[in-house]
Amino acid sequence: MFKSLPLEEFYRLINHGPCVIISSGDDKKSNIAPIAWKMPLDDDPPLVAIALAEDHYTTELIDATKTFVINVPDVKLLASLLGAGKVSGRETDKIKKFGAQMAKGEKIKTPHLADAIGWIECNVADKKTYDGVVLFVGKVLFAAADDATFDGCLDPSKRPTAHHLGGGWFSVADKRIKL
Image 1: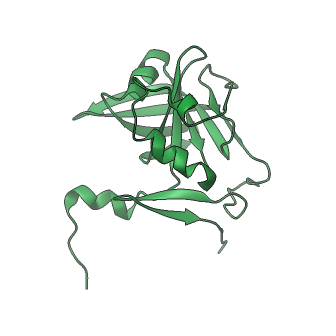
Image 2: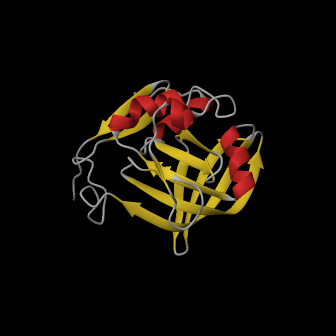
């Protein structure tokens, strides 16, 4: 037996990859924002896409610098992740408020979360707007991961990741399997 889903909930079937925190801005003004909507597009050339609301501060900063960083946090950062999603970076310095430790980018001026499992630095390669949502395509310039957690593939048993299921629900990935 199956039940019909409201169309606005379709994504809850497929969008439970790890929650990420986008850092935007530069060494003078920066921001962090959790997002659930991101995906790899290609590995040659390495491309990734993120979707943000058109009127969000993060979108404004990405438009200004043409760069962003995708940070992959572990569950220890979940409270900060949720808190940072409830306030605007225009009115609140979320980095200070949530005690985020930032580090300089390797290839871009946008900082990354020092406590993340890993991060992906991107230049904006393309931008499309759809009814108030901006889709940024980023060309990956640099990526790094905690060597105790990444051995060619993320091992969440070392540092579990949070996955947004929608409607305030999350799951935790804390093991991997190989078939």
